[in-house]
Every structure is written in structure tokens, then in C-alpha cells.
Image (cartoon, rainbow over all chains, first blue to last red; front, side, top):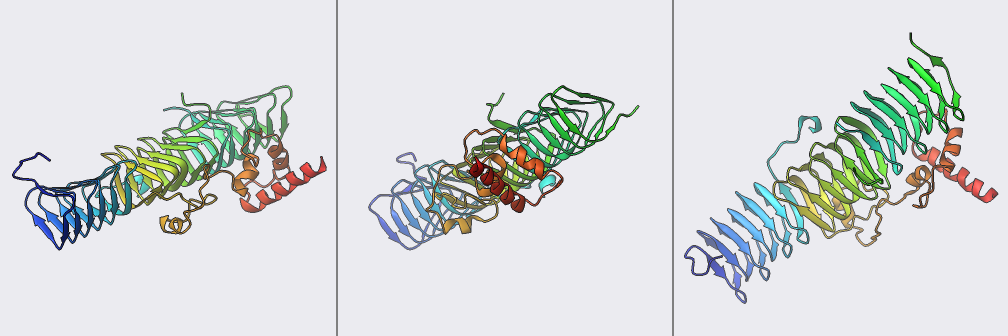
Length: 116
Length: 104
Length: 190
């Protein structure tokens, strides 16, 4: 996230949030959040982040710990340090080896007819 | 299209059909059909009817073998079953028990 | 060419039934049934599989309808289309891969002998037993592929199998147990 960008908000380390988080634009979370998080742009969970709650955004990148369902229009990425427990509804999901993921993923696509 | 190779460590129970060559080095029980050549290698065990363009047997086959072209039973090979093919060769040292029908 | 140990089911080949391998396997054709591989399993971009897949490592670039279980890892490459549950200690889903199902990382699938049937939920309850060759010989495979995973040639099994030759389509379990007993008797006789 670019420093000084007026679009990006950062919930820094050491911050504890209890309650819903909503926002326009992008959001980077390094904090501990208990509650749902909804942003219109990109949501990034840093390595030290711990979020318990449902998450909705344009895209989500998980490098910390997320416990809750995820609903995005675009892509969900769980990086090698990330841990996601919850169901994911997204256009696509990327899981880096080393990342943890427990949950359902539903992407919209069709198998070839031969396997229907 | 490439050859299908069923190596020594493989066991297949079921039906195999291919539009190309099949080389069996492992164990196959069921049915084998190929539009190309079938080779049953030395340590292979096939308990299945085989239908192919041609069949070369170096291992153990229990089943009926049908080939459009030729069937070759190689030395060390063992076939228990009927053969239907235009041409058949049985090498010295091979074991064969079954009927032969050579189409004209 | 793939290493000697790798078996290949080429595009244009259709297999309906059960496949067991104590080596590596590449699937580029069409497979329906069950697939258990002790080594590395690759489903190529043209591969179409309607089967649960279990192996040490499972790499999928084609289409699979079935559950994927790796004792080490499962990787879905770009172009993969998978409907089924995925479980392995390490799972990679590359950009471009499409998946519909449950994902569970960090669990070693415990059902070594019969990984194909039980879904990920059943696996989660016994995740402690962890042995490197997951599909290494359960009793039935041992009977077919000469029990210890030493490269013992098929010298013994064919002799035993010849006695059961008239049976074209044996039930897997009973003849296998008979064979094991006969093999054991032969060993004791020596």
C-alpha cells in the first residue's frame, strides 16, 4: 500500500477494534479486529493481523489470520503466511503453498461435459 | 497422440480402451482395447480379453486375444486363451493354451 | 520421456475401473473410477478424471470431478478445473485454477489404505497417523504387487495367479486373501 495515499486506510499493529469496520477504497489491516469488515476496494490483512468476522471487499489478500466468511467480487489470495478459516465466495482463489485454508470455495465454472 | 504406458507398479481393474499404442508392464484385469499395437511386457500380468491392431505378448495373458493384423507370442510369454488374428507367431519357449482362428 | 517408474495414460485412452500404482502416474486421458498412487500423480491439461485421487503428491492441470488427497501436497495449476474436496499438509492453488469444494490444509490424510472413499471430514478425525508412503501396500495391493515395497519381480504372483486363471473377473478381496495365504504357505514350505 502506498504511504500517504488518500485511498488507503491502515489499521495498524497494536490496534484493537471491536465492532464493524466499513469503508470506501482500500484497507490494510495489521490490527486485531473482532467484527465484520466491509470495504469497496482491496482488503489486505498483514502478517500480524487477526480478524474474526465476515469480510466483504473487491479483493482480499490474507497474510495474517482471518476467521470468517469471505465474499468478494474479484480474487482472494491466501499467502504463504496467511491462515483463513471460513467459506469463500469469489471469482477466483489463489492459495500459496504454506498458507492455511479450511473452508469451502465456490467458483463459477463448468466441468467438461464428459465429467458432468 | 502418444503411447499409454502402464508400468510395472500399476494395477488396473477395469476397462481400458485407447486409440493409440498401449504398453502393459503391470497388472491389468478386465478388458483391453486398442486401435494400435498392444505390448504385454515381460513381468506383466493381464487377465483380460485383448482386442487391438496387433498384440505382442512377452508376459502372462489369460484371456482371448483378437488382432486385426498379427499376434506374436514371444519367448517367455504365456497365453491362455483363444487367438483370432490374420497372423500368429509363437516363439520357442513361449507357452500357449487355446484355440486359433486365422481369418483369411 | 518420463522416468522409467512413471506410467502414462495417454490422451485418447479411456480407463473405467480401479487404478493402483506404487510408483508415479501421469494421466492425460480419461479415467473413471478410483485412483490410488503411492508416488506422484499428475493430471495433465488434457486429462479428464471422474474419480477420487490419492497420492503422495497430486498435481492437477486438467479437469477432475472427485476428491483430491495428498499425503504431502496437492497443487492445482493454471487451467485446472476441480469439483471436489482437497486435503493435504500443503496445498497450492495457482492463479487460473478453478475449484469448487472444501479445502483443508495441514492435515495428513490418515486413511492410508482406503483414501478414496471417505471425504475430508472423516480424515480430520484421525490426522495423527502420518506415514510417508500413504498408499504403500494395504493388504489388497500387497497381494497384487508382491507385499513389501521391494522391487520383487512378479515371479511369485503369476504362479499363484495361474491357479486362479479360470476366474476372469475375480472379486478383489477374497482371491487376494487366498493368494496371500498360498504365498505364505509357500514361504513356510521353504
